[in-house]
Image (cartoon, rainbow, N blue to C red; front, side):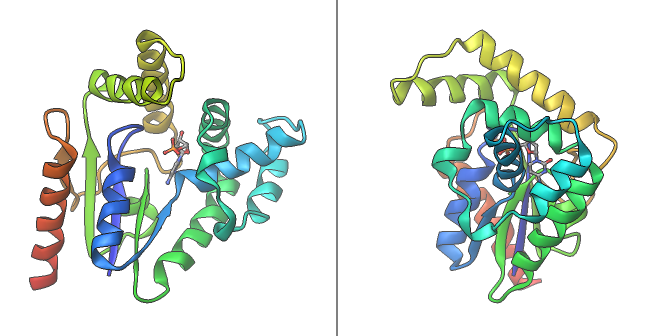
Length: 208
Ligand code: DC
């Protein structure tokens, strides 16, 4: 069983992916972390973020078993990830590693931007999770404040809009729903309802 979950930043796809994987006994890969790990590797040694060859070398050294969300969730690493994610040689290397992960039994839940369209086009279930930019910005803002962080809602919103434009506008594997993806708009949905909705799509696929 392979479940592909795509959607923009802060749509709730990560929480959904983790919960589905736990519920169904599947492994989980947040593919955003793989792009973040490449960005972080370059930042760590002060290398430029606009050199495809260097970024591809960094990508081929990424260990999927050593992705630390606590380190990789930093804002500047997300920005770096979004810049190297437009590079085809980097995508090729990471997509191949992600596919290998997905194909190991008993299957997996992968979340990202191009899972249903490129990484696992034959996935058993495809979900495209969205929410309005304002809702996503409000959630991110509340999350940061709850961890005693400091951020302005307006800055987060403009950041989300810029990230969306880059992810949807790139020529290689832009963010878009696969034709056979189920759409889940979480703008007015709590996580419990989103989870139940997703689980219903999975159960439906199992009986097909
Ligand atoms: O979901 P995230 O914020 O961790 O993703 C970081 C960046 O990586 C984001 O700008 C888009 C990119 N990404 C991608 O291009 N393809 C994926 N499958 C996952 C993430």
